[in-house]
Structure formats: C-alpha cells, structure tokens
Image (cartoon, rainbow, N blue to C red; front, side, top):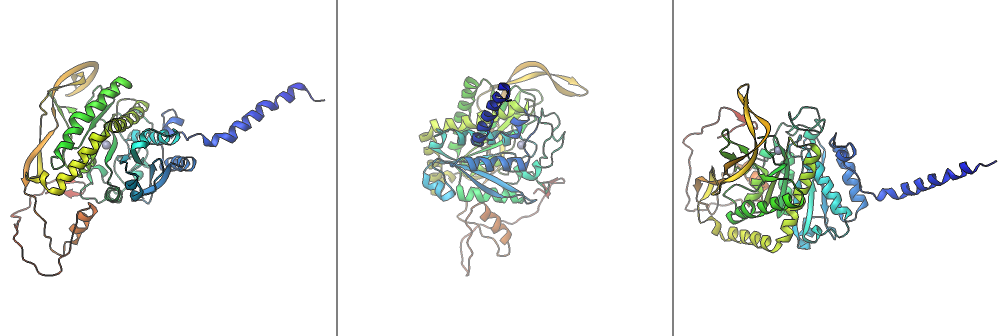
Length: 454
Ligand SMILES: [Zn+2]
C-alpha cells in the first residue's frame, strides 16, 4: 500500500530538480566568495570563472592578452554592449576604452578577485550604465606564474587569504618595474595591447604593506612630468580627490593619495616618477592612469570590496565628467602632435617636491619597540607635506629624431614595442645634428632587476 507520506516526499524532489535545471544561468562565484575569503583563485579557477561568464553572457568576449613565461594563458575579458571582439571594433564603438589589471604582483590578490566580481556585475546587469560610455577590458590575472607559487607567508603581515602567490614572474622579474625595458613576456604582451587598443583609462590594482594608516585604500595618478601636465594635475588634484569624497559618502570608508609616513610624520612620501612603473608609463602615453593600493592590514574581504568599489567609482566619476575628460585627452594629444607640450625641455630625471597644500594623514600613535617604531591602536591625525609634485632635475631638448647605428637593432626593436616610429635610412644623408659622447659610465654596485643601473 502506498503511504501518503511517501507520496508527499516526491514534491520537494521535483522542486529541487526544477531549480537545478535553471541554475546554470546563475553567474559564477569567485574562489574568495566560495571560501568566505579564506582562499584566492588559482589560474585554473580564474579560467573556469571567465569561461563561464563568456558562455553565459553575450556581451562578454573572452580573449587572451598573451602567454606567461611558463606558458599560461593570460585571460582578458572584453565587456561591451553591444559586444566588441577587438581593438578596431572598440574604436568604431566610439566609447572610452578601459583596461583594468589585476595581480601584477602575485601576492597582491585583492584586485584579481575584485575585477572578477566587477566583470560579473557588468555582465549580469541588464544594460549596465557603465557600458553606455565604456568598452571595458579586464585582465584579472596578469602575473599568472607568480600567482601559482601559492604559499603561506609570502607577504608577512598581510591579513589573509591563507596562501598567496609570489611577487615576481617565473623569471624573478618584478613586472611593475619592467614597463620600459620590457624583458618579461607578460610586459611585451601588455605593451602590444597598449599599442593596438590605446586604452583611455588604465587602472592597476595592488595591495600595500607600507605605513600603518587608517585608509582602506590609497591611490595615485601618473607622476612623471614628461607626460601631459594638465592631464596629470587633473587626475591628481581634481578627479581622485572627488572619487575619494564620493567613496567616503556612499561607501563609508576612507581613501587617500598613496604614500608612507616619513619617520617624524611630517611628510607623506610616495614612489618614484619613473616610467618603469605601470601608471607612470600609461601617464607618459598621455592617458588616464590610476593606481589602486588596498591596505594589507585590512581583512581580505574588506580589501576586495574596497578595490571593487574604488574601480567602479573611478569609472562612474569619469562617466559623469565624460565631456571634460574627453576634452582633456584630445587636448593632450593635440599638444603632443604639435610639439607644443615640449617647448620646455623634456624631463629625464625628476625630483619630488611637496604639493602646495599641507594635508591631514590619518595614522596611529607610534612607540619605539626594540629600536624601531611600531604603530599602536590609538588613532592620530598628522599634518603632512605631501611629496607628490615631481619636477625636472635634468631635462633635454626634444630632437626631431634620434639616429642609431645600424647594428643596434635591439634598441630599434624595444622602441617599436613602445609604438615609437623607427625608420631605416638606406642611403647616405647629411644632417645637422648634436652628437653625445659618453665620457664615462658609472654603474650602481647593486643589481636592480638583473641589471646594474647607469
Ligand atoms: Zn604591488
């Protein structure tokens, strides 16, 4: 005899089966979300996530930026509505092109997770407003080989996840010091992207373990005075402070310009203006470049969410001021083409000076412990000079062209990687020229990235 209880038991089973059959349309979860922020994604997990996103949402195109030193695919998502497949179609779309980069340093994993979440948000929201103004390219896992070297303690002091990758690529190169010499296959792939797509906006996501302070995230624009001055000042003095204000009003966390306290807390210092750093490089291409540095001593979850909020807020801010930003980019290009931005000699070495206004930096009271200063839990606001105004220490007149000896095709190849025109002279010509001769070459004792610097 059939009991009524057994018959009823079928109903929930049927219901479960029905839900399962529709669940394939649910967007994927990141590894960080699945593990309640105990873990970060491996390369295989990132690939699975981006493949599913591209399969489920027609506005997502899965492309590759290139291949890592150990042969891993560097995935790139292109999010556009209507979809675009390549640089040419992106240009034809007439929208601003954005590149968001994650995990350039293998242990700085919050950008990787945040950018996957941003991609999912853009893909799964019908007619996402940001896709009206932007074609958005996302490379969540740039240093794929460094990411796979997961181990506990790769970044001492960082609060989670349990295991993280290594800073450098497989060859031991710091990819965020490689933008000019371009020795890494990852850098060469990225420069190829810069040449073909010429992104208007570039955001590079990191994690900082410098000074103890009370900012969940710090940021920077381009610093090198060889880039367009108006664009640099707009990003540093107008755009980023505006984004910071919006974030504190809408998301309730504090952000500030990237830096570290100088010993006596009278100054807030930053990293050099050299274009071997990603955002300085993009700045010298006269494009909007923004560094995002989540705070190592915030929890992994806070860092991921802050990075996501920051990247979204930057794009929303640019969308709101699109005409202003587009005009600045167009003017910067016009100044470069006419040479008028180079009536002044071109800076080749820089000195950091304080910005004109003193600022308040939110830190902690520090006490001496075993001969070094250690932060206590007690908040303290410090009046600081912000050392973020880089001026020329040495400058040269920009020539019409440089002449290289024919045997230095290695230099020609590097210039071409940067998109600089190189022509071969096939017959003798006579020109008036300045000739520089090195009297001596003074090299640093210590190696930097496998080189002794001149
Ligand atoms: Zn970093």
